[in-house]
Amino acid sequence: MTPPIAQDATAYAQMAGRLHPQLLKGLAQMKYEKMTPVQQQVLSLPTFTQDCLVQAKTGTGKTIAFLLPALHTLITQKSVPRGQVGVLVMAPTRELAQQIADECNKLTAVCKPPLECHIAVGGSNKNALLSRFLNGNPTILVATPGRLNDYLTDPKVRSKFTDIRCVILDEADRMLDQGFKPAIIKILSSMPPKAQSSWQGMCFSATMPPEINSVLHLVLDKNHARISTISENDEPTVSSIPQAVVPVAGVEDVFTALHSLLSCERFDNPNLKAVIFSSTARQAALMYHIFASTGGASPAKLPVYQMHSRMGQGARNRTVEEFKATERGLLFASDVVGRGMDFPDVGLVVQVGLPSDKEQYVHRVGRTGRAGKVGHAVMILTPEEMSFVKKNPEFPIKNTGVIHPKAAAVPSADIIQAALAKIPEQAKMQAYVAFLGFTKTLMKSLNTNSAGIVALANRFSKSMGLSEPPELEPSTVGKMGLKGVPGLNIRGKSSGPRPDTRNVRNPFADTRTANPAPGGNRGQFGGGAGGSRGAKKPLDSSPGPASQTKSPGGEPRRKRPKQETK
Ligand SMILES: Nc1ncnc2c1ncn2[C@@H]1O[C@H](COP(=O)(O)OP(=O)(O)OP(=O)(O)O)[C@@H](O)[C@H]1O
Image (cartoon, rainbow, N blue to C red; front, side):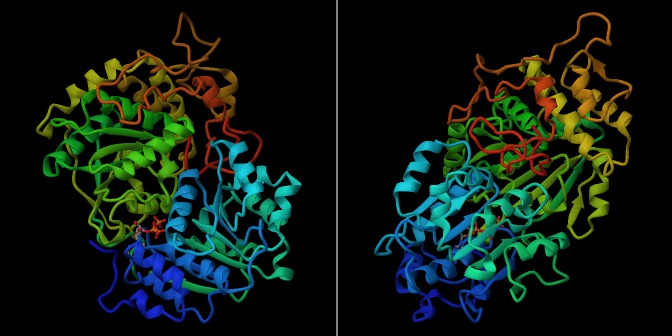
């Protein structure tokens, strides 16, 4: 099926004379014959060099919509001196940056002379990429802000931006939020001032919360064009994606309900390809291992994959490649793939628990129903989380009624219990600490207090089969703002031997799953951060820009991520 392109959409062939022939040839090779609405509107602007703020729904071809005008200008106007960066694209995650670079390379495949597109992202081999960047001809650079700032400490790198022509922010609302804004400001301070060199600014996203308006001046001039393919009364999600909520009786029933749901879905569609989002990296890893051990969604096996910030970059890259290529399978993910990622033919998105905000809901749902294809989205919510549905009536979320875990054709409760029994205790402890940290950030939306959060986390702990809540360092409790809250098991304040969450390392390092991801990314719970260490930065996340710490891959972490709690 083709993207949501109207019958009367303009064919790219009709752009002959307006778009450079080499780009038209590239489009033809990619088999993009007609324009999607956002591409049509952007290419209808009076000039391709105009600053613009562009909002269009997920999966409707925004990448090509920003690449075409930028590349056309690059090819047709005074050439950028050799070695200089002409177009800079910034995106929030390494995987999305790579995906944009891949799309750019396909589009420019027939360009002569060739246009080099480089990437600067964390977690990868910095020295090799930097040396290629310094010695090559990186006319186009796609970067994550943390790594680019890291590059920019080198004066040789800074000197490569003196002739910059165009700066593009993909996922612009995310790039300009509190987490990333300082890094973006720092990057822009290394470029010639916009007022003098008048580089073009472009901001694209599927969501544009009002807060973005006060910071647009960083990238766009005040006469920028505003394009939205979403009309005022339109829903913010793609209308061909039915959305539902499965309310469960309590936090204890979540995994069982998920198993029931996936089993039913699998029954309807033997080639099910689904992304299952969790609030934290630890929970994504936990669910991956549970479902690897149940053999995918029973009764038949589906390959399972995991994707989150606790994995090494090599494993992350392999998972992206494999899940893009596979026809069927379950990807247990955190929000590292919540925005922008284009996994073809995902037919189902499941959100286990709440997204960090309503924008994140839109982006997660948008991993299905892309390019005009069909898909649906389901949330699994506890009674405490159900207010999300009421508070956001703009989302057409249908309440399917409580699914009793045992109502499904398979004994999901027993299967989950058996799978949980095989999960190392340390992994459960880590999931508990991450759950506590993330749920604390949602205290207001959950309409509860600290004691309520701890009680919820303790029920979660019990449901995983832990005899008592894992022990926390007093300093961790302080950092979480939970000092004095009853129900916590605090080191030094409890009697008798307790499970120890310190120095927890790769609890799966020596285990083999029944259905490991083909990429071999087993045992990715650990990364060395134990319960208390993990909780030390309960809000930390790898895809974010610099604040104080650096991830092992050199991608700076930000103070308060919206996307992922480890
Ligand atoms: N003109 C076109 N014809 C056919 N397919 C297209 C066209 N433009 C884009 N696509 C395809 O549509 C899919 C979605 O494109 P893209 O990833 O750019 O969407 P997006 O709007 O940026 O989504 P998101 O908001 O999730 O980032 C991709 O698989 C892309 O290859």
